[in-house]
Length: 586
Image 1 (tube, rainbow, N blue to C red):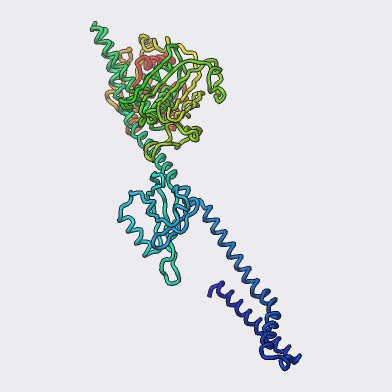
Image 2 (tube, one colour):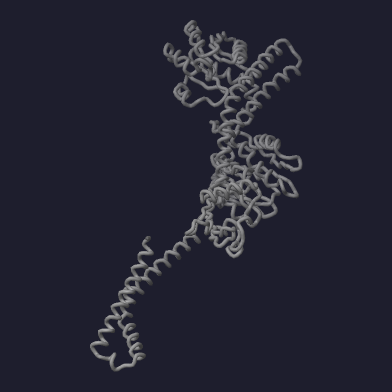
């Protein structure tokens, strides 16, 4: 017997005892007073009833009615508390009869599905069916409820608006005393945001995997580019000496230029796919913008018009060229997606110089400099809801459908711009489109020096014996040919161990080591550390086809006799470093 039934039995016993005692007292009173002899039978019965009620009323109130009333109020409070808890619960709750008729839904249900309580009660849960699950899915669900009294899983349902959404559903059967289903209670959670975050994290993991793949490809690809550009330089030198036509020399020069352009594309892939180190330098923003837009247009359909409006004034910024291009590409891609379903599909890109005091967003801008470059990317899309404007730069926030965006594009662009001491703002008008405005501080630059540096003839002040170690044979042979054209004697090694053996065989002759970092058997850093046990001040130029591992290079690049050269490199860069290190000893 449960506690509740025991309580009511106890109250019944109290009731019986109180009535019995009251009746005994009434009978004693009749005996003492002798009233039963002087009253008629009817009068005696009425008086007996009055005495019974009078004598038992207060004990019944005190020992029966009051405890029952207290228990009832306690139960009522619990019911009200549970009802309020269900109504205010964050999870959606639905209660149905065995035949599927809805008898209760809470407020969270209405918030998620769009159906009010009045619309839902009396209806059937099949009004939420999305059509994504087939008949067999529901057959398995009901089979589990009937056999186990419970089903738990994920499915797709449909809101009143027609929008599909994922949910986690837990259905339980509430049995009656005979074990038959009395009610079905379903509790479900909207998984839309969770799925969005999961998809974004999945995309991030994909990018990490792509980064690993690109890193390996970059190393091999840059080795090829280094060999191509080096061979083109050697061929160009020989062509000039033999008096070859200018067209041949120009073509060889173009091959070198195209090699470096291809290498720059690899750097862009590395920057997009994973975090990488880059150096800031003075760059022409207009040129970077043209390159970024040209890259972005690869993924822009032909029915979208892209208009580029650039000021003729030179605008130089101190920036990481790859990162700035990535930010621009992200903004252009965002504009592309915004106009995809518009009647008028156009993207207008403007670049012009300005001053902070003339900027309409100066109240929210943190830039403190004399001159700025303003970049505006305007689209003819449907615009952004005013409630979403403050969220567009948040990581993982997106207004696109699930699976259509990671929510990282604008947040990445925002991070890049702010890391360059710039600012980015957005204005949007419903049904007319949005404008993203980027402001970057201008820097003084000497473009003449940058432009003419690659045209300066290679000067060699001292010649020496150089050990070149690289497992890529074409790179090794090409670097050797370039160095020999400078007048140096070259010893070649195929890996780190071979380099050590060659070094000890010619240690009194070698004045410089040029080594690739990543090689089989032993890498370049470890082999150089072994060589420096004998010759601590050994000058070294490390070559790498991608970002060098920090844990490897940080212990050796701090030395002033160690330099790093990224493949592919210009012959002028190689000559400059070689001369600097050889002349240091000569």
